[in-house]
Image (cartoon, rainbow, N blue to C red; front, side):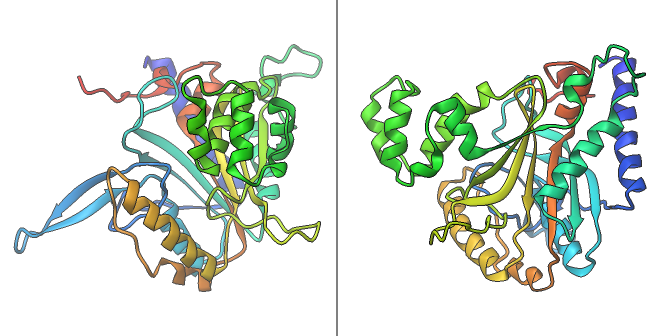
Length: 337
């Protein structure tokens, strides 16, 4: 990274802070180490140990993959809109164009709001970060300016894969579509043994994401409820018994996944159930198992209605700089050499 790139990175971080200060958000500064973590089977973590100065006993600690575990405890006590810029850590993460095991994350939570309000605020953030261009002048940043495209997951599957996800509640149905799309070139009969969420992920990553528009950022909205997460359910409007969708979006900019947002789940019993089910999966499959607080759900007895967004800042800076890789804008890219 040269001096101009360092200055550009610093200017974006400053503008982000100024944006949220002007919106009267409280800036937080939570720890990077935690005794327990929220179970997420889709990622791996870093483990370290604290050595007691009294008896040299060891206590396991974990580098946080996001500040969420602490921020939600604060929101349970003080229902105010907050944001945080922090270093986060994810193990078994590739190093390269858009990945680094240590990265900078922006998290912001809007109280008394849903993922719809978070999408609008995210568009405002982009507007604040982009330079003003005089009317009628050529705008090199037009492809990053709001309004962004809003596309439901069901619409995206129909548009780019040729079928509605809502018509495929069973794994075998997704397996047939994956075979028809030519997404698995090995023994295709193996797909009939895959789980629904594994098949969904295969089609999403190999078929949907590569075809998302590049001329404007895209909010891919309303994720399937079959994929566990701590987002609220989208209310049923057609008297169906099963909940099909979660109030969740991810933001894609020129094909890069940039942000993830939920209307946060507030029901303590659903949080308790998620921790039990996802925690069991995590303990069974993780290469780096971690401790899970069985009483974390109790924070949600006083948790406010809110929406939370997590955004990768290294990726954001690269996008704003017109760069296809985060490496030039990382002060010290990760290396084992």
